[in-house]
Image (tube, rainbow, N blue to C red; front, side, top):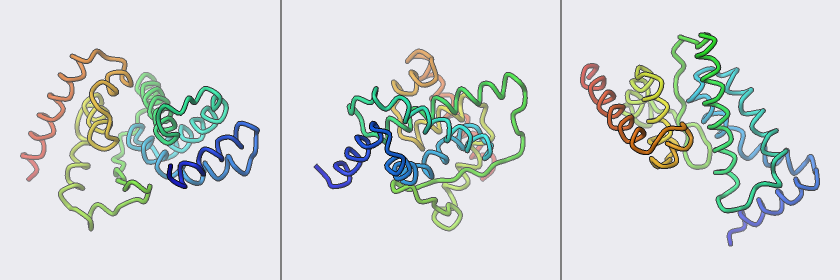
Length: 184
């Protein structure tokens, strides 16, 4: 077992006992990547910040339900994604969705934000073009291509059937390809 896994496990045990410094250390370790996950879905930095904060509170409150079947980071990311989608749907319902283009941020596995323009201009163009897709397509592609979820997980997250998920993914990829061809 890796040192980091052992360290996270001991931090989680301290969090279960209500240790605020352990909670702060976990927060410091994960907040950047969780913020980026939320921001890609809700497309508003202030709302993403709120969703991320609420997600951490929820995770610490429900920490006793964490079974350890997946890593803590994956469990936390699932909470953030679910809360982000829920908040995004609320925004759409109230028709307060920010139309302003918000640049996507891509992060590496360590949670560091990559400068996509310098790292890979093609990746930047794909991310910018993804913003032009309809909401279901954009969210599905973000979950699959950026967050790494498989179709079954995406269908659970989006509350749709596996068949519908496959259809949405196929149409989303086709739409993205079409839009990329028209801008290139």
